[in-house]
Length: 126
Image (tube, rainbow, N blue to C red; front, side, top):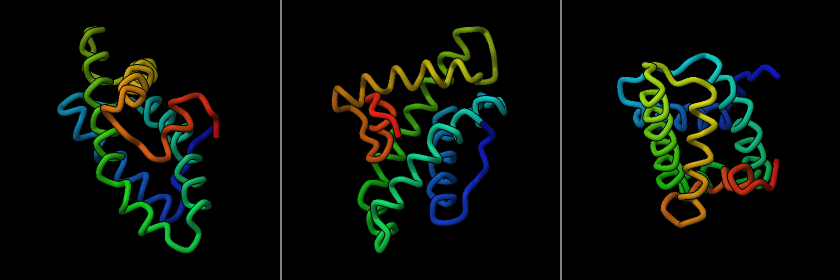
């Protein structure tokens, strides 16, 4: 499946998530495959979030933006750690997947919160 950036507001929310993820990665690059994987994984969840709030998606996003962006930063930090541990300076798809698994444990433990990411992190599907 090829990921494409959806129109606003979904595209705007995804952009904020990717910026926060990049803040977490620091100076570690991100492979195109990892970006593609993130688009395929998170774009449907953001779209679902938008559909659940048809009249007030901006207000609903504002309510969960800060902790959700912290989730993305944490995901970036952990993915960067996995890449460096492999001796690479670029985050691969496998690093992102391993980071998602690690952060999901923290979500379950109450450290991070991502309002619309919980579906994927807790295995509920889209």
